Length: 232
Length: 166
Image 1: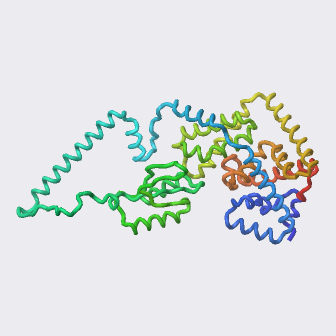
Image 2: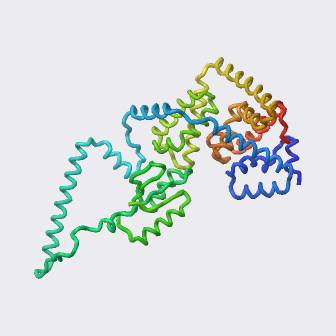
Image 3: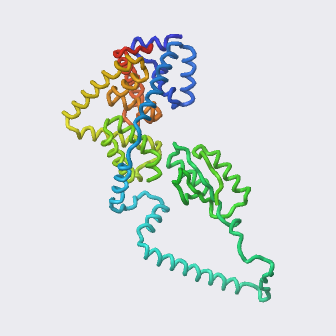
């Protein structure tokens, strides 16, 4: 079967021939990769051309790798420019969470502190009201709970703490994929960027060890996750 | 932004450097690219990989930077580049160093051919992604790379290197 590579001489490349560079780079879909493999097995001239392409591929990578990296000047210039950027207005299509984040980000620290204090006070008042209602609804005869002297008064924070994991995403993970994954696992990023690892917190409730191991296991199997380990 | 910059700045720099051929300009380019990303983050629709989006912005910025240069400057640089690279492969062949000659010829390709070779081989972009970055139909992407490879073979042949294709 020389039909494919015969076309080289006529300067009319075949469809398979055109795909060879992507085959060398491993970026063809499974169907095309299979077609190319089959053609390579049939046609020695095509296989010879493929060997040339592999050489070009390797040299192009070497050439690019030899270009080095930019100096720190570029990074300093970028972050200085970002610092000098005017405050941005939130985009109309931002979701509710982003709007809330933007709202709190725009508040001054003092306003934020007062808001937090008022919020805390409101919670205390709310707790008091609920407590009073419960007391009134209970039957007249009741026993107060007593504390035995050999019981610990401290809570087991470890059992009640929200589960967390250190996760490294695959280099080609898209922002949209990561957002979808966070939604799927009801997780949020609470810290990240150090060494490419992100600290994720799951759900808003404590999990048993088995439950959490199950979550970690599923997470490990996600295509865009290259590492997931439990962390305090 | 630091995570994004840390992950992608080297590849953005190398892609830009291969297009503009000046480290100074390429460094300025990456600042401009990531600043644009910072400004336009809300416009990223997640339909392509972040790296593809970054390379498309880099290409646009690189071409704008090239256009800003005076024509005379550009001609001089192009002439120098051609002169340099046409000499170097000969020297390399004298040393029987095909690999070195291949590298020099890769550098001697036109900007249009260089970018497509780099996008496919080094940045490992699919046909569809290259089409998106360069702004041409997918079939044109395939044929352009084919003719870039043919040009590369011609340059090597002129330098005395025969590889058995075409």
